[in-house]
Image (cartoon, rainbow, N blue to C red):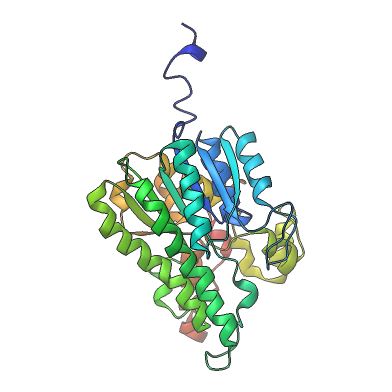
Length: 323
């Protein structure tokens, strides 16, 4: 029997072969990268979102689509399946999970990466001056979508032991003890941390694990081409505009960490916890595309401490020391 014919062939480089993942919010950024890396590990990945090649969501970016994500998953070695889904519509989410059950008979990994609310946030506005409709939609996009998706996905996920639920947010539990102004953003990014903690309690009796996961300063497509006017190849030019950007990371970094977590048979030790891309890098030895291991949250904490210390603080923290 040749190696290619062996029943164990490929397990080392395809540890998620036979596993089924749903990445909700997989159109771009971390969601797209996580879907691809789960596929690279061998998983079948359902990539959902609102932007397709036929329809663009309210965000207004036609460049990235769920079909494009699914094709990248397949090209990486997995099986990518694009399913247009508005995760604020329970009927659509229920139909999505009915399809996963019909086609796969199981769900092993749920990644709640749904967001899409940045354009609605009034970053410098106090709560009472913030547009109410925009603020409430921020909460719907950042919190309600996660609740609706978990409601319909978890019953399928807990049918087999070992399921993993990942609540993606911005900021670790330690860092988000700070107020992440404005109020609506703070609520939207704190809620997934609490959801992971609560789901961890409820899932523990079903052999499943829930975690919150935060990338650092993410070089998403929007961050690169809209905010800094650079590309992934030229991202360091953005640090000339804002020196702190030197601690940023590509979506691949958190995606590699997630894939390693999903393949870890002992991942239950993290149940209910908040993890960052840097935490996963330290745990599993993964790196960003350039071989570095950025730790944006540690850098920001030290930078804030330096600013509080004032004139006696000494040299400003260097973001390069946190890579």
